[in-house]
Structures are given as structure tokens and as C-alpha cells.
Length: 301
Image 1: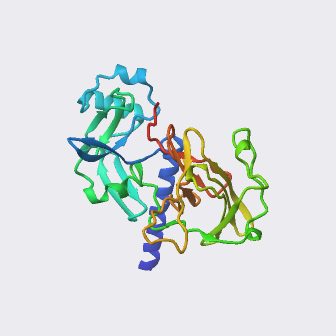
Image 2 (image 1 turned 60 degrees about the vertical axis):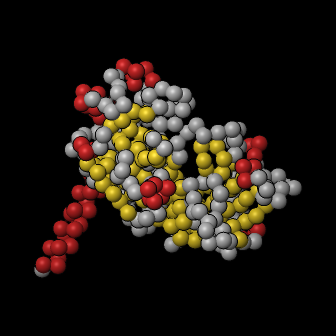
Image 3 (image 1 turned 180 degrees about the horizontal axis):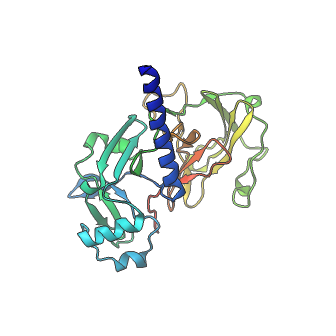
């Protein structure tokens, strides 16, 4: 009887978390941020930029100091829908670790954007992440709220295995005016790779170029026989493909592409295929009915 009651209580707790997260999402609060770095007195520090989506004119109306006053802090937190009683959850999927801070314990600071104005408003993590972990936590996701949405221990690095041409699915690229000039041509030298994670099979076609920034990727992902992802990646003025990791390469490869269950109440994801100069990165779901989540990084330009 005790075991049954324990299982019921666990189920109820899980349902409460799921419905709480869904309620936050319906209210437009399912915002994912990232950890970035700034330099002060030749020392690298971390911060979480929160001013994404807030215009220069609105920021200029705030009485901003290097550290926000109590009045400005209250105004800003209200503007982004964050309460002092909320928590900041930082999930490093590489370390499989979540660190948590109370909003009320984190200073709100301003920092210069690339154009010299004090337009970034951020939670300061100075001295809260050890120097040796900074590079790892820059590859992490941040959620602010009562409970976090992250599913621990389900993300894996994608390490590609070379395959033959006939093993790649006979699926065409979704052609748009934007990607049309980059489509594969008959004379292109192509390479084919695959990766498997649980019941998902990943297939990658690459236009073989010596210059990484001229490479073109066609990524197809199948769950059994269902196509759950059909993506096309290429470089442009503001974005470039990210280096890949391969089997039978050196052991010190840096894993950029990851996949798996990142969120408790959502399908598996893929991340890390593109670097953006004038935009934030995104999280793609392995389910066509789900829209991508764009990270709120404040890439203003």
C-alpha cells in the first residue's frame, strides 16, 4: 500500500510540474536564455542577457546605472515578467548538471552592446561559475521561473559515421528562394554520414569543400519510417555551418551538435548546426508540428 501511495504521489508531482510548465508556456513565459561572457579588469565573467526584444528607445527611458537601482530593477523585471521569488536554472547538458540561483540574489547590471551603448541588461554571474567551467556553461540553457523544464541525462553528442550514397534517404530538400542558389549540383562531390540515437536515425549529406564555410548540409531524420526533420544548412553573410564530429577522428574533437530529450514535456531536439552573426541560435524539435525555440540572447545590431 505504501509503495502504491508513493507512486501516486510521484505521478501527481510530475503532473503538477508539467501543467505548471504548460501554463507558463501559454502565458508566453517559456523563454530560454543562454550564458554569455564579458571581460572586466582582464577577467572573464559570465552573465545572462535579459534585454532581448526590448528596444533602444525603451531602454533609454530607464534610469540605468552599471548596477540597476531598486526602482529600475523592479521596472525591468516587471517588463520581462520575472519575479524576485523566481529562480534561475542553468542546465549544462554537457556536464548533465543544473545550477540554481534565486532571482533576488542576482545583481542586474548593464553592459555595452557591440555599438558602444549600455543596452544589455543582464543577471551578473560574477564569481558564481568557476573559471574552468566557463567554456562549458557557455554551452548551456537558462530558464527563469518556479520549476525548470529540463530533462537531465538525455542529450548526446552527434558523432557521424560514414555511409554509402544509397543508404541516404531519397528525400528532396525543401526548396526556397533563399536556399535555391546553394542546392546540390550534379558535379558536386558529396559525402554521406549517419548517426543513431534510440529509435531515431539521422542522415547527413555534405557538399565536400575544403573551406568549412562553403560547406552545405542536408539533414534528414527519421523515427522508424516517419520523417521528423528535413533541414538544409548553408553559409551566408550572417551564418556559417558549425564543425562536425566524426568517428575514427582524433579524441579531442569538440562536440557542437547534440540531440535528445532536452525538455520534459516536449519531443527530442537537435542543436548546434549553425553559427549566427546577427541572430540567436535555435532549438529544433524532432516533430514537424513543433515550432523551433529561438534563444533570447539579444543579438541586437
